[in-house]
Length: 102
Image 1 (tube, one colour):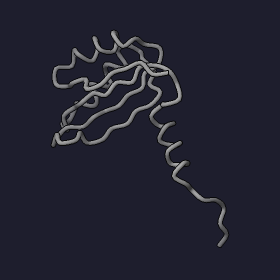
Image 2: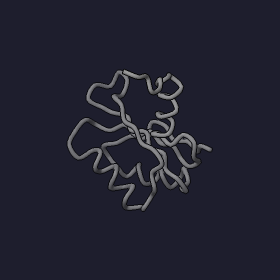
Image 3: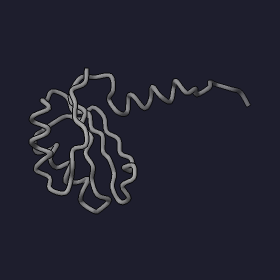
Image 4: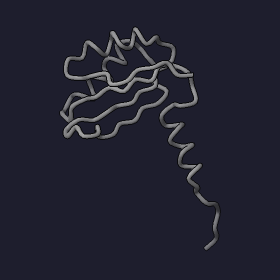
């Protein structure tokens, strides 16, 4: 067999950055949701309702919070205040971090 290429740590980190939309500007928000049917759909419905474009998204288990997940979303062309107002309407979900990113 022939070696075509080697995947390095840098390649993997670059792919992760692209997946999370690190390179573009916008608002990055981390929302904590319960591991329950419909929670992620409610979050996505809020994005759709406001017609916000997503540059990246990732989800992972919340540390020391069994049964909960943190969803990191990169949204373009919005303000921190508008994202905060929209996501605060979701009773069962909590914004754990929100910031503008460039």
